[in-house]
Amino acid sequence: MKNKNQRWLSYQKEIANDHYYFARSCIRQNFFPASETIFLKILKEELGKDIFDDPEQTTCTGIAYHSGIIPLETTMTVVARQFAMMTRAGYENFVCSCVTSFGIYTEVLETWKHFPEEEKKARAALLKSTGLEFKIPANLVHTSDIIYKFRDQIAAKARLSLVNCTDGKPLKIVDHVGCHYAKIFPDKGIGGAEYPYVLAGLIDTWGGEQVDYPERRHCCGFGFRQYLIKENRAYSVTNSKIKFESMKPYNPDMIIANCPGCTFFLDRWQYVISEMENKTYDAEGYGIPVLTYEEVAGLVLGYNPWDLGLQLHQVDVEPLLIKLGVTYSQEDKFKGMNGKELGKPVKPQFLKTL
Amino acid sequence: MRSDENEIYNHGILMETLVQQLLTDIRFQEGLKACISCGTCTAICPAAQVSDYDPRMLVEMVQTRNEEVLLQLLSGDTIWRCGECLSCKTRCPRGNTPGYIIQALRALSIKTGLFADSKQGNLQLEVKRTVGEHILKYGYCVHIDEIDTGKYPEQGPVWEWYRENRESVLARLGANFNHEGAGTLRRISKQALDDLHSIFLETGAIERFQQIEDGTAKNSVNEK
Image 1 (cartoon, rainbow over the protein chains, first blue to last red):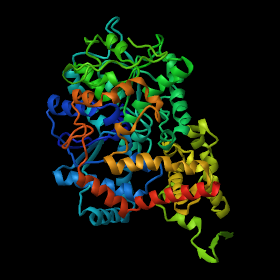
Image 2: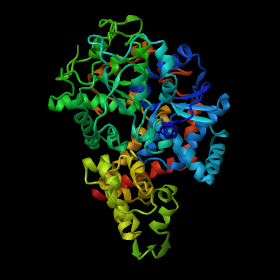
Image 3: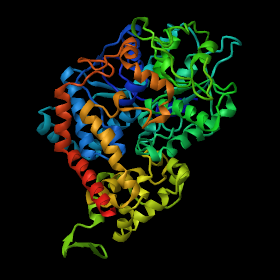
Image 4: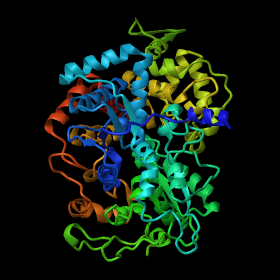
């Protein structure tokens, strides 16, 4: 047993306890625009942590870099600027809200470790182009690592569990951690590439049941340029479909995703497949709801689902809310600021909505 | 351009060979140790599941260090098929990373202008004119104002509703849409955008953008 525990220690990572510099995600801000707000609220108001949301931060350039349109030197120098912003603000624990970014920041730090001359070049390029200097972060984590670290504290404040309120059974939940969380540098992710536990740990702690299915570790199909170029999108939808077909026999109640891109693709491609083939991956025809971990944490803490932005998912979340026993107003779902009437989205051709 | 074994001549002047240029890229140095051609990378590759892309074959080709073979790769569609998920890095039993080799090949393909000889290479223009330009305009790779259901039909009707009503929806969700200061989808400061532009200029991104524009334009003139 002792040996087993020691082995598991090598799959753990250091996650700072407080005082974080927060870096936003290109995709999460647009497609799940309440998620980062909820993350900050949970950290500040529920956990009493200090986290700085700097207006001067920018993209890490990850999507452009992995699409091959900018040089490595550019990405390293933009990352250096992000670290300079952190240094200027007086922080040393860097937390990013995107798995692609987490891969980029880790890649840059590892590159500088193995090729110190590249760090010198990046420092010189940053100084010449912006006049800025920086310190290397003492701790680098993904936002979900922090939710994972404090999962028990969140559970202690929980208003509900990930349990079907009608029969008391745990909800069957698929986790999708995203390739760049631990496939590039396995020792930087909780559980490594083989046993990623960053989301599974949330499922276990908050009362759900993990779904282990054959294509659990397969890519969602983003493929960077393969999605960005319209005529290449078959790459993306086909890889998501491989996952849906593989998970369907296990009847999942929902999917939790780590990476904002993965959340987006696993949600939208279900809509596309339903439109193209009149096919859904649940028994009732609603599709499988796909949530970010911040949204799930918010539900567990009893937040209003429409304050979490769950109305912006294409796969309707209402069947999931009913299973969880969440009290919500259907009437308020598509209202704007101060209850403004904004009409409703057109219903999909086949994918059912409540 | 003619090639004599490993030496490349351009108008009679000896140029750095493609192999020599690749060897200066740290991603190439890190990505290619010694491939044993086991095919594990191909077995788990998402690109190999949807196209004839085969990372095992690609690494074998690169490993020959043959200039003609490299010329063929840099001018063709193959190197543009990878999705850079980097699943290959986890699985290779010999520590190779075909995805890193791809990154080095793509950079060299654009630098030499050879990307414009392939259909997939030409499509880099689409990425440059969206994500590339968004970074310099908004400070992020993606922005709601640029994503309509014409270009991105998979976004679906909920996105269409959200985008039409974005001011009010985002205000309800606590965003700081298009305003100064911190918060979701805020307007990025001029200083931050200026910094990004200076970095892009200093580190070769602006030059690469121009290479993509010029190479694609030259190709379309040749096609006409």
